[in-house]
Length: 146
Image (cartoon, rainbow, N blue to C red; front, side):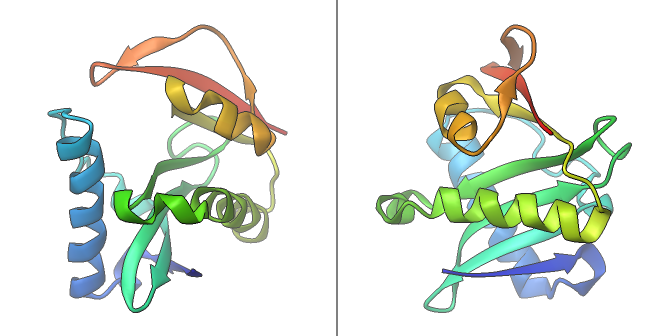
């Protein structure tokens, strides 16, 4: 998988369409969660796009400190269902962590992680802060990485 980071205004229409399609496939359809994915925050984010054989197969959005949480943050982390056997989630989150450091000059990151992915994020250096909570009817946990 190849990764690339783009600002919102640098995304092509096709890239935007494909990344929104991937997010909807996973977060709305696969997880059976009706929520407003297009939330007005994409314009503030950097977009980490993972491609394989010319298709977007993984994605995350990255925010500077203060845009979402007090610390920098990573969100909408997603890998296409038919690509998860390749373990690209770890490559994606490591690229996102590196992007925060290189673009925003910090290693302090806060995320709102789906609870079932707690161990995944822990293996990538995040620690739990607080207790679980419902977000869009899915259990989440706040996690930080310093």
